Every structure is written in structure tokens, then in C-alpha cells.
Length: 410
Ligand SMILES: [Fe+2]
Image (cartoon, rainbow, N blue to C red; front, top):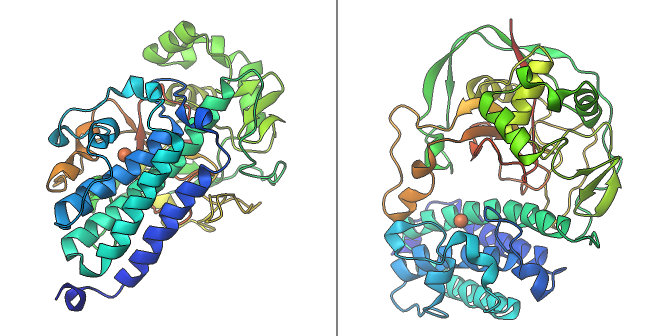
């Protein structure tokens, strides 16, 4: 009897599953079918695709594989909404996701309901292995909730009418805090997720690393500090940049963070005056690295950041809550506002092994050419952050809420 063998916390699993599914659907409520269909550039996905793909994940890895009586909503959807799982066969090309005028938003929402109702019916009899995949599916969907918001921001940023999706965070809620430096631990420390609780495979195993003497800034770099960098010719001084970054700045004609427009920035709430006290956001690794060099500092390593986070207080800052908005915490917190670039390449930990089956493609095959970001952003769902978390993006990516915190040798 699967229900008797199940560990206790799984009652919470079911409510977290449906709370997560509900939040994703609510994030789509302000969108028209046209809003939800546009793909602003190949790395971003249409809102409709996120809504369907997260459902495909549960449909495939939980319902198809563990519930013999399950019947798919539409067998053609596997081709449309498989993201990158080679083991699941051919799929629609990522850069052409914006061509999917059909299925409609309404049909995709009906697909979600079909998957939710099937999960609800099957839940009591799911095996421990299937329940682990439900946990993975929840965390997967939370990642897509954040991508959903940043992709909508990128979509609306393309429209000269400057439409507003909805205010994520009230303006002017950042408190000014002078920067101070915190001495980090020196010597052998442990990083990575322990074997308790959920973590993605890339966070394990927990292992020892060596930290040289260093200090970490008490808060992320702010917009006013970024303005000083611009005014000092930061974007036109080649000696501040990595060669690849300098090529990128020139080729793409980069002169400011992604959504800055003069004295204003484009936000999910529409155009807003740039808040000088807010953490600088929508920065590439190249920009973060150049700013750190201009400051006479450097980016932290992921080990330095994680060891700092393990002793930091307060932990939780401005993050997305269950109602799909941010309840401001003016004092900030290291898990919120912006993801923070580290100088560490996203690579495997000693003893790493990918999860078994198709979901083993989740992280391991992306350990090439990307950098680790730590913390969380204002668009990260509350509860989806921990010191061992390793977000990752290529060095030119900046459509996420990405910023930086300085570090230096000491
Ligand atoms: Fe995904």
C-alpha cells in the first residue's frame, strides 16, 4: 500500500503542488491570447508555452510513466511542449515557439485543468518514486513562474505602447544602506546541499572546498552606483572588460542595463523613474565583471557566496508571494531582488551524478559555458531559495533579474 509507506511531509506536497499550479495560472490572468503567444527573442518563451510545458512535465514524468489509466489531453502536445529532453524524442524548435498561434490560450488553460484533475485523482496512489517527480515538477514549475515574468517583461518591452502587465513591486520601497564589507571565513568549508530535503541534482553532493581570505559586500550594487559607472565611461573603457565582453558591448551597442531608457526603466508595471537605491538589475555577467573591476573589487566565487549566505541575516528579502506579488521588505535580504552573478563556472561537483531517467537531462548537460548565480530575485517564488541553490546562465544573458554583489581579496 503506497499510502502507508509514504513519509509524513507528503501531505504538504499535495497542497504545495496545487498552490504552485494555481499561482502559474493566476500569473496568466492579465494576458490576452496575443500577449501569451509572442516570443520576444529565441531564449525567451511565450507565456502560453510556459503554461503548457509545465503541464507536459507532470503529464510525461508523473502521469504517463506512473499512472497506467492516464490518457493524454492531446498526443500532439508532446512534440510542441517538450523543451530539451532528447530521451523524449523530437520537438518543436525553440526559436519558433512564438509561431504557435494554436493551441489557443484557452485550450492551453484547459490542458492545465486536465493535468491538474488527473494529478488530483491519482495522487493518493502515487508511488514514492512518482512523488519525488511531483516534488521535482513543483520546483520546475516555480522556475518557470520566474521565467514567465521575465519573458513577459521582455515581450512588453518590445511594444512602443509600453503596456503594463501589473506591478510586481511597489515603487520606492528600497531603503538606503551604506555599503560595508563582511569578512568571510578562510580555510576548508563545506558547500552544496546535504542529503536531506529537496535540491536539484547539481547542488549535490555536499563537499569540501578551500576559501582564501576575502570580504563580501553587505548589499548588492545599486542603480546609483551603476549610474556612476556609466558616467565614468564604464561602457567605453576596454581595459575594464573581458575580451569576449568587450566584443559583446561593441557588437550589441550596450550602454546601460537592459531595460533602462534614459532616466526611466521599463518594468512589469510600465515605465518608471529609475530608483537610485534599488539593486541594479538586468545585467550580464560581462557587465557585472566589468563593474567589479572598475570598483577595484571582483565577483565572489560561488563558495564564498554560499558560505556568506549560510551566516547571513536576514535571509529572505523581496520575493514573489503566493498571490503573485511582492510584499516589500525594505531591509532587503540576500534571497530576493536580484540574482547575483558569481565568477564560478557552472560545473559538476566532485561525485556528481545526474538523476536517473530522462530528468537526468535537467541540469547536467548544461555544464558548459555558463556561470553560477546565487540568491534569488523579486520574481522567484517564496520558498524556492536556499544557500546551495545554483542558478546558471550564459555570460551574455540579462533578461532575468540579475545583478551583483562585490567581493575582494583580504
Ligand atoms: Fe522546463
